[in-house]
Structure formats: C-alpha cells, structure tokens
Image (cartoon, rainbow, N blue to C red; front, side):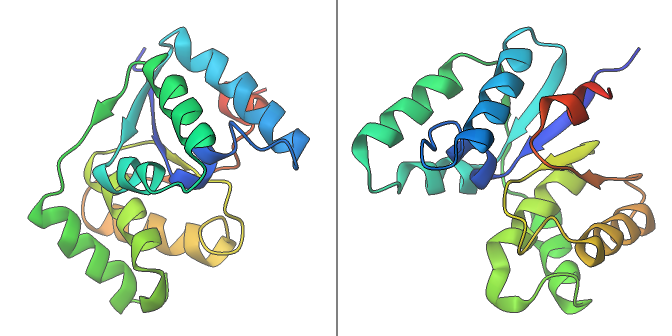
Length: 159
C-alpha cells in the first residue's frame, strides 16, 4: 500500500513548541512521533524552511530544527510549475493575493502530489472554500485530490 504523502505548512511545525497553546503542542508532538516511524512520506518546501529560519526566538528556532532532524522528509525545489499553480490559486480567488505564501504552500503540495497539507493556520488555509478550491485546481491540473487537515494525529492516522 502506498504511503500517505503529507506536506507540512510552517504553522504546523511551529506548534511543536507552543507552550501557550498546550493542546496544539501536544497534537503536533504526537503526530511528530508518528513521523519518526516513517509510515508517511513527508514533504517540506524551501519557503517553510526559510520561515522557520526567520523565527525570531532563537531557542524556539533551534528546537524546531532539532525536530526536523528527527524525521525523514523530502525537501523539494521550487519549480516553474509550482509558481504557475500559485498564481492559478490566487487568480481563481482560492487564496487572496496578500496571502501569497499560503498559495505557494498549497501549490507545493499539489505539484508534488501530496495527499494532504497539514496547517495549524485556521484563518487562511484550513477553510472549506480554500479546501474545495485547492481540490478543484489540483484535479483540473491532473494531480488528483488534495486535502487540508488539522494537525491532529488521530486525523492523520484515520481513526
């Protein structure tokens, strides 16, 4: 059986160290434990790495990169196809132009044929209109269905 391929958006990874929101931190840490077993294929893009590198809290930034060191993931390259999909997402109104990086994250996941995107950013990515729009674009471009799901280990495990 093919492994589920997951794209991690920056906000999900950032919640590995979020003591002021303990339920999010607990969910991400539980999910991260599943990732260390390599039962999923994980994809992370250069913009995600850049956003993590730009974390102003040095202690948190170092801790997040230590978490990344614990899992196997594919670090993709940004391609012309990804930029084209990004503009399609914005031009179609799925994501507003001022949320370019959200569109870029979705485009990275679509172009690399991920099964799902895992954000913890409910205001911009994890919305029904964004999910339906991303799915329509992905299918129209021949990449199959893509889902956007909350960073919960129970949702990832399918329980």
